[in-house]
Length: 312
Image (tube, rainbow, N blue to C red):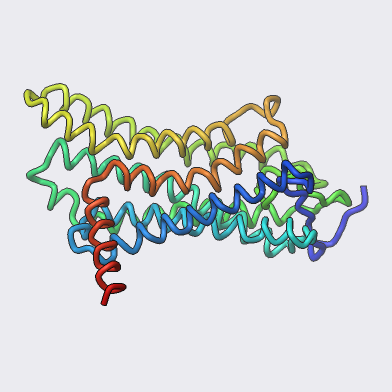
């Protein structure tokens, strides 16, 4: 097959065509993406401005919102411009940046969710030692570690993927550059890299999942030993939002990256990726705002202040 230069652009086939039904879905995706941007930006603003939310738990939550905000900004604007203009080209550098940020944010979020489960474990099982076990230094170390591990994974996979020679077929059957899809266009034998990439993805999912399961096993054991129904209710309420987010995140990620190759299809991969990158980020601020009384209180306070300013 004819090789092509690394400077040649890729072509993203996209998620939608130009039928009436797909135009409606495209508008729906834009509405969801805009809602996600507003929701996560508002969550960041509330945590920044309200002193009652200046605690490690909410600092971790602010990083989750920041990651979701960046994920939407990495994927959706390019997809929208391609669909509206019909120009579906993306440069190798642009493709590399999408792969890097997507994996950095996805890997970072998996470890951040593990850090949040540890925070809940300390708050429920060792409340008196919480200021020591979950100090600002520990919190900052977990956040920096999450970003670092995600960035290492993203940098390695982006650099290795773009190092291959690609063939004359340079159409990517996706709406953004994703390493597994791009590797399929390579002329060289990629079996070793695909195996290593699969192992990396499994580790980036299984290690945080194992930490989360250990934390919640200890939490469940502590809850079952509580004699007060009110204490049990508060403990379950503290964990329920995080468990919902963990289920959405890891469910989509496992379906995307840990399925056998024989069960994969481009169509399924695109729609699961759309759920993972567009719809999941909009649910996170909704879940935490609806189920968390302190976040709702901060939101009411902010709205009251805005109302007072408008009346003045």
